[in-house]
Length: 258
Length: 105
Image (cartoon, rainbow over all chains, first blue to last red; front, side, top):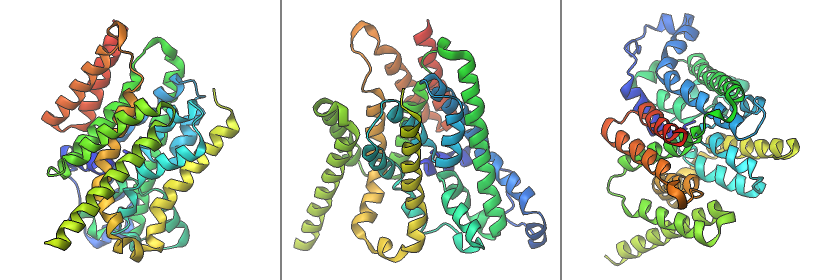
């Protein structure tokens, strides 16, 4: 999930440092008890994943979908922020092409995780397939730390599995709760814009020098919402990409002249 | 409400795109790593995409009858708390709680 959730979860890790993080784990422990070590590693992120999963499940059933779609979404898609977004896209019967484009742009950041994710330590085709499938922001954030350099393949895969389970259980329980309380509690759907706001602030913090990017994005979003309300996301993303490419072209021209 | 086949197709499309983004770079790492344009977009897109998504989520807020006040207050609380405390869970929970309370008053 949370979803650049990498910032989101890196932040969570900073806020909830795991005191027992085994930066000097003896090799013997790693070899014999990767499952127990992975469970400990997973707590810091799990404490954020479960409540977010609950909110996701509640919003899902409140939007009119059957509760078990929460299990399907969380188990099969496993990209938190986009799953939230997909509720609205799907209930509005958005064209599949728009869904694909939006999924690509929202999850594009994952392409860059491959540069440093320790997949070479994960052995076996099935384990590698699962490990790439479950390479969420959270999993990446946990395995990108200095402390994780000694983690074995089984320990990494186990960690990913536990994070996956937290998300599935949180989402499913939330969906059942949402079905139970029905529409009596309005306004829970603000969890999604709140999540994106937090992620945007964290992403902006990583690049404090970049003011024009977010400003362009805001203008692109408002223009798209006014000009093409039915196709707002693809239009806004296209305008944003175009603006960034023009900025890139301009800076390359400048550096060539300089 | 959407039909089950459409929902299954939406899930399948999302899984295919998301997994491809996560797995393909391991297969074809070199060209992607060398693409300076992609690298540039990867650095600058995330914040922008998230800003677009915030606007997208709030685009249907009505202007009339003070209905915009609950989301506006919730957005201010979320952003303010996050700038101040940097606690993801606190910012989201407090912002959503403000929204729920204001809507159910």
